[in-house]
Length: 264
Image 1 (tube, rainbow, N blue to C red):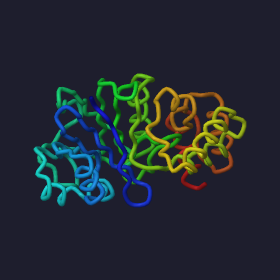
Image 2: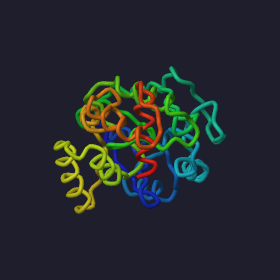
Image 3: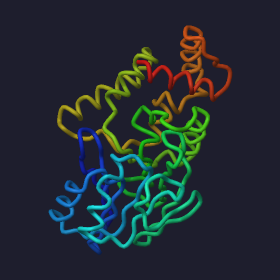
């Protein structure tokens, strides 16, 4: 039986632990800190077998060296063309990663960073396939563009948008309420967003994570996945007109929404 658990780190990071109860082995995704992972592994009597890295930022890689020293995982898998050099098993988009008979496809999703990749598996956990997407797609948001272009990020999100609606989106941060404040400002008449915001507020009041998200819901709610939605297009064009930005195609609509979030 497989389980996926968020391990909180820093102030708002999630380090994901995919565990196999039959073997006691664990796969860890984006360990920015080592101590929370070690504590979780020891508490649940798990052996660290594999680490997956989505991109090079320190809040996703900072704990790798210590975990490697403490637990000796068989492999540390991450993007080949990356500033982070702590991986032992480099992968390229299109490669496959096999873990405990579960196959993950490596997907290129540049935008937040140029080396960013995602890992997708058809294996169903909690009712849907698994998507570890780092900082590319969030609950009602997307990653800030530190290295890539709006065109790159929109294409990356289009790649993720093409996955099955039942896919569980395991992102790396608890940004949901902040993202929803922007989404509600951008689309104030969207009742579905208002309802989702209320449910997420209740979850956070109970100290529960709002992730994973479900991709089908993201397609309906997330303004960063709705560049071809007439409602989002109208809002983007109105915003663009005020700020002297173009808004004539999908990439420009997405760029206007991202600009709006960056300056919100």
